[in-house]
Length: 194
Length: 288
Image (cartoon, rainbow over all chains, first blue to last red; front, side):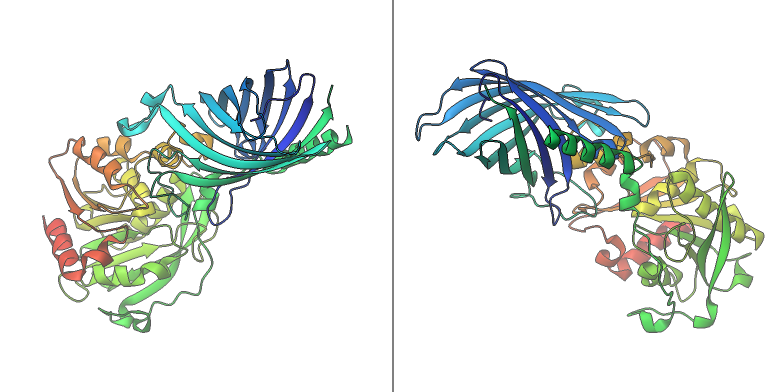
């Protein structure tokens, strides 16, 4: 999203997921820090995944490519790694991710944003019955309210829009029969800002 | 700093208290019911209610015992001579949801032509315990075969029919050492593997063990089965992928395999294809 100011540190809680009548409450806790005027680093831990006996983390960087100016969007790019370790038998996977974010800063506190993210399944050959795919994109659209200390956000995602998913006995929301729609909520707290 | 402490505490508690979650326990949806196996519950094709018996059995999975509820349609005195279909039901709360389907099987080829046995897996219907593994489901089916064998059933007159969830234990039962060797098995609307289920839901190359310890693998186990197998599947099935099992079936090397690939049909195969076509399919398979 919008890169952090240099020296700024945030902790955040995210809650949400694919909509199956209600958003699956996938939750994560994360921290981010503005390493320079253009570069932020961040990392997160997924609590709900741990509740199902798997460790999931994410760690990455976000780089400002273009500053926002009034109605002209700011653009940033992210590189992220998403490791998942299954604690039942010890299988592990890692999914690199890239994202391009377009955001606006309105009245110094309203931050609408859109973007495109993509998970890369570099082990796609491990998908059974020879049906693996490298690209797992998602489109997202959201809004953050950025107060002096607290930041609150809501985001809608169209996950895996390049494929038809099959989730037995669950009524999930797809768009045109492709992918799944998700809704996410965020609360973040600024520990300090330089 | 207080905010960080609150947030951290929340997540640590969430993780600690829910670390034994398993997707299978959410998906295996049994519930207690009042059994009602009467003609009043049927809309077409009926039974002689005097030939319907509902009773309990003890199932034992390696020392883990559970009292399970079972149903037999037909004369128990004729188990020593009748062809018997053991029906392993799908992932609905209880046997009640499959009453008409099992009555239909009993009426294939004429009224009460075949004996039909059905049961509730542990944790389903009024069966005790909780189904936590494929071995639990297989053990419950084995308990039924043991009951039938004790009343004179021989392997040449047994057909095992697994619908949807039931296809998992049916395939495992057929391929593994059973009380009676399985010579005929029907896999109706089957899944393939627990891993493929998760991969179809996420699109990613994740192992099924990421979210569940309920591990099954039909493509693998049927390699050890070389008797008669009938695969029934609707091309429009939104619960168990037709394409997935088609891939498995096409690579399954067994001259005794056959299939009914039902164009335009969804997950409720027997209902959607209509009784005359279903009856003809079952007669052809059982009589071979």
